[in-house]
Image (cartoon, protein in one colour):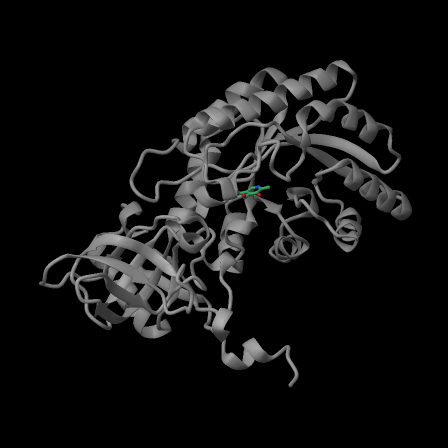
Length: 413
Ligand SMILES: Cc1ncc(COP(=O)(O)O)c(C=O)c1O
């Protein structure tokens, strides 16, 4: 965050981080409201008046203050569970501003989604189409649905976050889509309003995103010729950010490419960005708790945050930039920066050349605003850490640290 928020001088930011670490203790997530505003505005403006809706993907970070901020900017919502739908509703999103995606919606989820009258339930299979129709008929309503198509396009991202290939579990093969749209149009309980595609996350080249957009536009045009008129094309999320300084797609260029692909159809474009809106806006503050050197072998910097606070390195071998908050005199060393969890995969960095650090030093782990706190968990009975929102020269705790009593509150002995 510090490096990507030009408006705040680094020394001011460092002083804020020090004050936050003193008040909230570490580990602690810190988000910059200004960076979230700037990222949202960049995407929104790039549509340049073309009809669109930005549905923030709550899965990236559904902390209330973060989602509230995006709502205040005019964002709509993309929910991947009923819990996220309810968070969005609680924060003031109208049902017709929410799209609901999920590869395995339960009967209870379908029932409630139908009753809410969401903008679209994104349908993942012929079986789910049936189930939504049945529940809508039982409730004597018509559910607005979009079909999630799987275009068999390689997002060229990490295999664990690629979703648009035939071998992935998501959506229906795009060549089956016309028949399923016909089916949806014939059902008493359904109104097909859109087509949806989401081919993966952390996508760093424009081509797969552009191809996926062209595929759904072609589908919508073929459907229109048959008399099935959609209202929106939901192009999903997936735009990557630069964790390591390597080039990524410019967000405005991405939007312009989507608009260029869609303009001929005149259809409204929906997008579901998560990471690009909040990822660079967040850091994780963590403290060095040990430094140890195996003779003739590795040097370990052990910190008080681990895979419980940031799963991405353990899950995807993901790279995060890490820096000490203050520089010390002393030689650089090649180190593994590891967490305190009893799993060998609990490492934030391996064999990284790192400045000299000592026990109690504060480190800043960058770009954790997306899929950081949202994927946090309490393995080893580690209570969830606090979250802080900086806005200009002010900051506030938006989630206090969980207590052990709260962690155990649901259990009986
Ligand atoms: C259906 C859907 N929409 C949107 C997103 C957000 O993706 P990202 O955070 O990469 O923009 C995801 C995440 O993978 C998703 O599964």
